Image 1 (cartoon, rainbow, N blue to C red):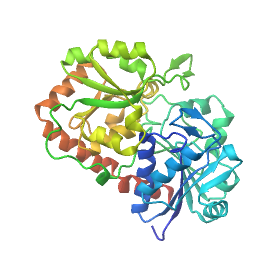
Image 2 (tube, one colour):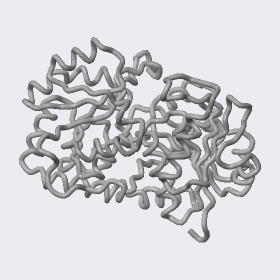
Image 3 (cartoon, one colour):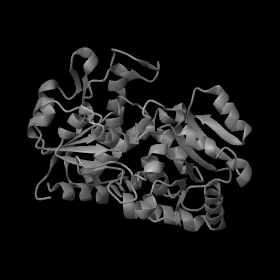
Image 4 (cartoon, rainbow, N blue to C red):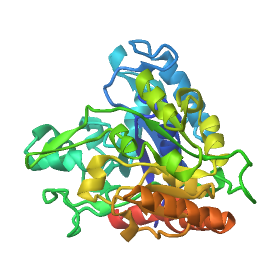
Length: 390
């Protein structure tokens, strides 16, 4: 960079006050900071605040403001964040209203993480506006169907990036055309995820953290339904613990008692994801003390072969924890077979487990090596800046 870029990350960490989203935002902020950017975080989604302690939407933003203040202080940006409270007529917290206005007036670029913010006049004053999509497929289908809301959302940006790294490839069924998507992936600050030397604790098992059932984002394309919820994919591998002769643990956001009972009857260990997701440090400790990650992907990414890869799985890799995850065509982008395994069948899972267990140290080192080579925040975000040309 010829000079210090003034950059704003628009996000939804307060709107969704859970550790997975928090780590995602923090990695972007710290990654840009380490590249020498003058970076600030702004949450301005027009969505009323959610109070995780009371599990309710509310007009009182105190929980959200307190959460963001703690998060930004931990991330080293105690005075570089702002929250605009839609429930209070746009009152700002963190930075004052005038400071926030000046921030937009002086910014060189903004990054609309998740595409969670619908850009308005003060956002549009920023010359470079980056739409950074972490969940592909549904937006592209909505655009192909002529959904004006989604079209207008994306058209307000000057550049478009997606975790769907296979978009536009011959084997990818996601309809693209109106917008050009640069491929990108989750940046990870590697020293925040220290790879633990030696094997994990003797009682460590393969784990993951997930929402069990989410059906609001299912979508139809060419007369066929494509699911969003991961529960449908987990159910396909219900007999895995018995077949593998091993314990697998799912940390789930799940209020479905019969579903939990069914999982436990098939040998899965289930725990409540909420206690370890309310703060970033228990979440990190959970990953660091796991043997590795076993998880599934969304039907939309699997069948369309979007090339999507999980930001959470990237953290497992950074911690030196091997990952076994469902194939979305990421194997053409990331190295697989050591430290990272893509599966389509239960036999593929069993083969990956056997390979990892035969030489855990080798696959732990390979996992960390993939994180260093492909997810290092400085590399991922330098590539993004270069592609934008700022």
